[in-house]
Length: 80
View (tube, rainbow, N blue to C red):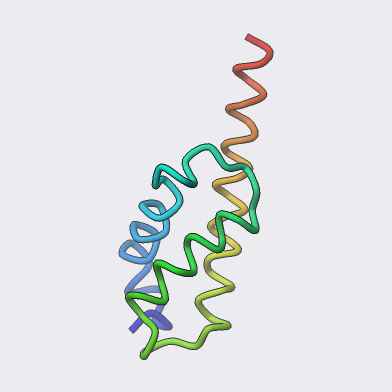
């Protein structure tokens, strides 16, 4: 069950990381786009055991971190 974030955190983060690193999302720095990829992946795993609101919240949080990291990398490459 996804809503037990403490117990499922590693699995959830793994699913989100995989979704946000797929070819179509790999270079994106758009949080909304990344969250969409993550939400689609989580829905396929947890659709019947967790509310959409709960999944969306975790996707938004994870996508914000991924986008921030990618923006920082992009900035580092541009200034190198």
